[in-house]
Image (tube, rainbow over all chains, first blue to last red; front, top):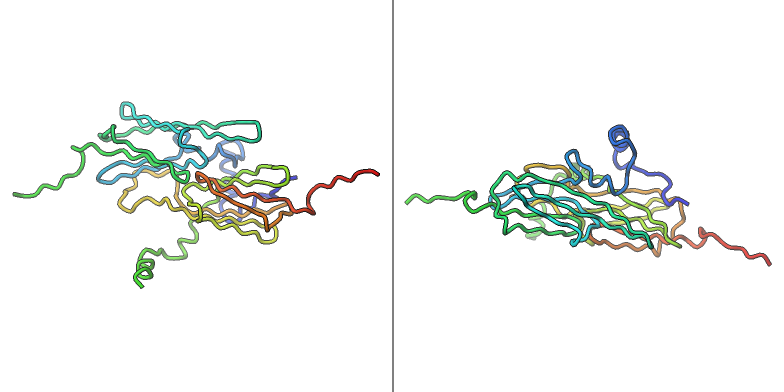
Length: 139
Length: 126
């Protein structure tokens, strides 16, 4: 027996439109995990931020453990790779994801940090010393 | 007194705040005498979820705490860190008193035990 009578998406007035579009564009009505990673440009949605000190890349990775994520910086391309493992009784399955981002800024590669908290991945890419804004005092 | 003033300064107009949410992805897993609903709520801390069961409607709302610090300037945005809201119409009688929930890594797992009267009964022939 099904637990859910029907998908009551009434909280979002545009849900039906979204569904029609996704059916037309992606060829199917997918509510599952795989849709989580879809983005127009890759398989993982990211937000990019910066401040004076660093660039920040954040992404939603609910249910992914730390050990299943790997981050690499090579030739100014930051690659986030990983997989989400699902265990149901005896069967195991996994969904892999990958995203590459070109970093157009000098980065202090030795000081890159990444955290995964409550399903949010945050990669901190500190800007190279000579690229940080400097206040020069008039002597 | 101080805290009240601070809160008001940070508060956004309530009308815009209320409209900003999206429905999370979820999965239903059939267990032996229960159903488990896994709701993907990235950026939500443990005690920031609210689950209510009214008649046969299960409503889940979760508020995120991963908003970018104000000094971060957005360069590119592919997802909106807005709160989650989901409402599900249950087809099965569940034991409301024994519903349990836990969050782990941004996944909210709600276990809904099937009510005694809704369980299949085996009748043995005498």
